[in-house]
Image 1 (cartoon, rainbow, N blue to C red):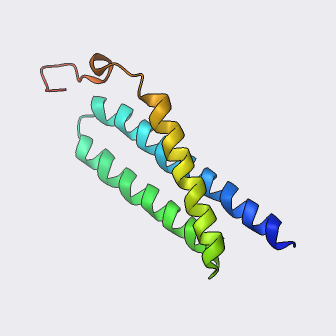
Image 2: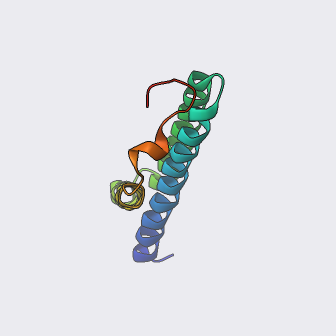
Image 3: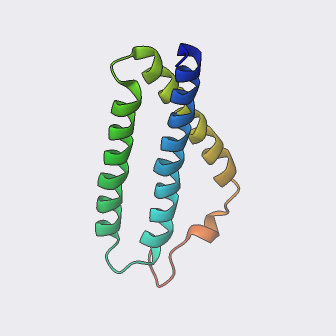
Length: 102
């Protein structure tokens, strides 16, 4: 396979890993705000998201720093996109009901 194609696929894989990581984070926050035991949700989610992300980076990089760098670039790009898309949420929409602090 052509090296350029491998590098492009590494960047795309970084975007997929970023989507999994930050999408999972968003889902966890939504579930955790309504859960009886939010600490368990956040801890398990963190371990699962980090495990998937680190394994993905390891597999994509395969010992090549250029692939690792492009994978990280794709990951960070998704982070920026998700941050901008979720910035419009109003503070009241994230508040926990039931007497807890927001």
